[in-house]
Length: 237
Image (cartoon, rainbow, N blue to C red; front, side, top):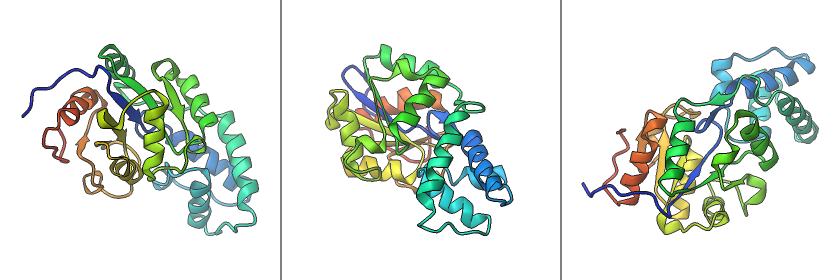
């Protein structure tokens, strides 16, 4: 294995929901609030948790379908607006960074890395969440889907996030938890690192990442490994 090196000048792009912050409790709560307003039964947390991470409209569409009332295209925009308002009002009532996130982000910055959030969540919601959980100071930029040419898995989203902090795709890593993150990294031509504790309906080892880790504390070592062009095994560190 090649010798690991520091991260000076490297860019690390992070997905948000399911990677940095466990947002499922508040997202599920907001969805169930909307369902209740529509006289529909609430959905179990464990069922909805894996629906998270593809944007508000996708969550509503899947949630309404699971509740037995498929959402028509004509009602979707209004309900999305209502959902966002409900979610924003409780954005971090129960959400919190995953264990080790604050320590690792501090370490990465100390090692000279540029840090950017690359998320399909809207930028304003992302910033509100990061502010609420105290993570904003760790990042040089936040690039939601609305600030990118197209959302992940389009590689231009990842490339735009890297460019936003003055980084180079030739020395960058995308860290996420889902197929959109794995494909976004691949489509941008950067190594993809996935965490195993996030929101994915398929086994994370099957999503095509260059490496899979099971603790956020392993992010620095994994990034150094990928940037050193070591052979990557997606079975964990």
